[in-house]
Length: 601
Image (cartoon, rainbow, N blue to C red):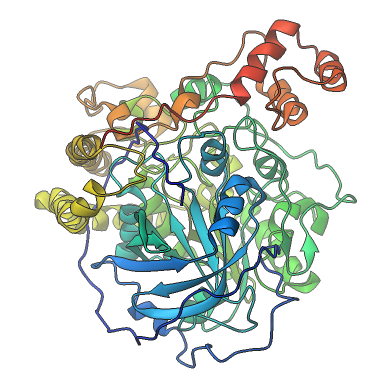
């Protein structure tokens, strides 16, 4: 098996405290080796070709929850045909499943589907010939209809991309869990492929039918809003992706092009917006929050919200869609909010979201990386994808991370453009409750050295695995430096939040711009120690190209690895108004990998 290492990529991470809860339950031990040799490719939620063999289906509903124990390191022993595995890695951006057997904490599940997953992280790794350390999705019923792992249909294992501390995503979910948000289950995981150690990952319960059964007794509808521009490209060189969800293609040729209000990236709304325009630094696209991702109401036409409804994770229909639209309509006017919004859960979500400063989310120009849950006409928001949390996205200024205003915690957009938080915080009662949840996190997760203790506890749990991780993005020395930086950043972020709650530091963007004298000094923080997304973080937009031109230009260039573009591509780029020099710069950008390999551990 060909194994590769990636060198120094650095990740910013803030942290919050690790509550050692959970239980250890011995797994049922069975044996089994991968014997099926197949390269069959299917889309994510299609099980048309799955067999009816349900002999490995668990009868214990959601018993997997006892096995995803955040106080322990899980084990995933994956057995797979070597040729099929390498073919999958070589074509990772296709995100096609192959068959494998997997032993999770000693329990064997045969003939599961496994594929690479991700957006910008997948693209950058695909463009770097020094690593194959992808995140993966494991779908237990891809080939055997109805098969689960103890009641779970899918699980993801995430690769710690852009996180030299290994802890950002873990800590983000832990804060969510602490304040009472229905976060997916999570635990560190030691991954092996055909008997060889692959690396230390984070296993996360996929938010799908298993999660829905565990948390909501199978009731309600799930959506994962994602705009067409995000599916097109999160970074230069990405391809446009389609997936089939509930038997429907996400690409609807009849969908109308909505004239929805988009963030003005040339405004001075925040200091961060200037940073964002300097480059991709995590995949910024100017019009990414289209067609419903922002949860803004436009009209009653289902096609106006294709980013929501084309990404349904349950078998939703027209009547389900209309309930969501009705909720968004009432949200837009602030009418009967408690009838149409699960206010308490949403306030808890945004309190935790504000603490962890995750801008690769609903609160920024991207407007994604969340699940929308609806039940009986009431909507709420669920957390997802936190490897870029704690300031690891769309900012290069440590002060912006440490002092993110708690009462206007958005980036590059206005509160009006994010009504799920904007409309709620307009209500004094809800603003007060939101601030109480922030105080609860400060008291229970940060005060009296709790945050530093949590980081130390996690370090004790995973440090040996990090030291011996053969595919790690970072050296062990870089990991140790990140841990120290992580503690300091966490302490300063908590200091700023507490000051804002106490009224000694302005808690809004406007207030901080008028008087920055009381802001917490973050000059001691070096964000590069905590991570970047590689060479793209240093990319500066070629002179004369704005983001509106960049997006169609990168669509035309696509995944080209040739030294020269075709005549047709060049003509199209000239039609956009680009010069030959600008075209050359963009072509060079698509060939950049995420970093230089550093095999020294």
